[in-house]
Length: 438
Image (cartoon, rainbow, N blue to C red; front, side):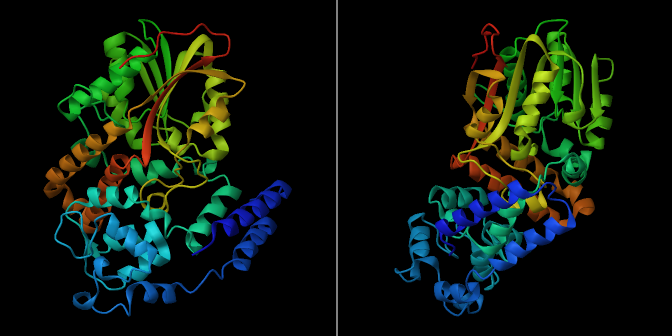
């Protein structure tokens, strides 16, 4: 395994190189970056490590369970402490179908875990609980420092993967997959963010409660003008216009969201545009985002706050609803980045607070992270129920990929590995608004 101090030294070297690069996109600097990776690519024989941990990787019926692994291997002992047994009888215990699984996970960590599931190398009845237990035991940290992870991290640190040129990639790859999929999976208003389950008994009620909570936190009154950065299918815009009598401009990088959203918002003072958040102009009483900061990226958090500052009227209010990480990151989770949300990175409180400095006062911070677990489980139940009508279009491989995405995400929130923050903020000097609601 790569020693943490080794990675720290590389990161320090990279920071020096990065400060010297006027334009990291030039061919010369690309070659310099690749040379750095090659120079540090000899990070150990992962095949040998796989053999050490898992014997000779015999056929499935002969492969050993986690409980029978040597006590000298710390990673295996900790997996046993998480009460996970390979090919065990509990619903959260995985059933391995391909003996190459072990080496692949040691080699590629979370990327290998997700890819091998999609390819049918293993199964798990309660995949969400398996991920919860893995993360609770912090087993992801034991195999994270591998060559491909290092490459991914260094690339994200050096290059702005959420630039304007890349902004629409997630729209094409994820949000434009098909409105039939999202209509089957989401609530009736098409909210694709965490619901609020404090008193709700079902997904529709939880999402409406979330929308109303946002409206109350930003103090909506009839006639106000609201800018929504990352509007989805217009669920907030429609609700706020109908219930609170405001007008809303929403921007998104998804053509499919704009097309369906404008149809759903017909007759209301709502405009949805296909536009990058950095291009928006105008002045608004409130500038909000519900689930877009995850696509902004570390290089651009200050830029996002500059846009909010530019577009807020005097005395206006800002609001962010975002998934958050317990630690500051430079890159996204590799499997999710490759197959679900390209270029996505979860922010930390430190990231967002630093971006707000000298501009905004944080008025309220509300963590509703535990509410995302039931939201994701409800989405999965809807998806599974609708699959007979979807499978001809999307196929079995997509089913496994989407199942892994939804259930592993639920496990991430159940383990408290991820959070969901709602943040209310105003410009320095603005009287404190009434914004603390539950």
